[in-house]
Length: 157
Image 1: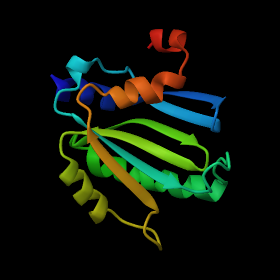
Image 2 (image 1 turned 120 degrees about the horizontal axis):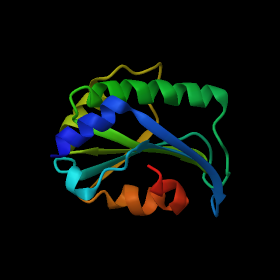
Image 3 (image 1 turned 135 degrees about the vertical axis):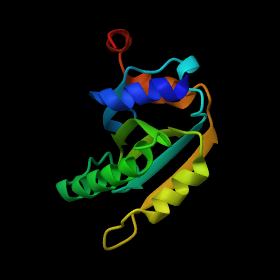
């Protein structure tokens, strides 16, 4: 069931943007809708968090235009590498406090790593920090990332 629902979300490619401020300062959040129910995420039981720090932590900095352009190129390249055959799905992008975090879900961490290694780079390697963990219920996305979204906004998706 998971691949079918993920395919529908990827095909529709609808996003919601939220901006706000929390203890770490201003943030921008972009996430895909509809938010899939746990029963629709089978086969995507690992969260892959990719962080690109563009400024010092605790700086509350948002990216400069040049940084945003480089991060957009990375995002497009990696999404093309993993989403065309549904190896992974980008569920959210959070920009805050000198860093951007992409939240992917996948059933094959090793394949994602291989595709990341094989995709084109710019002049220098991308300054990325990757972490993964098992998260079959997409709790990181639901309970941490979407926690900044007002409940009434989530109800209309």
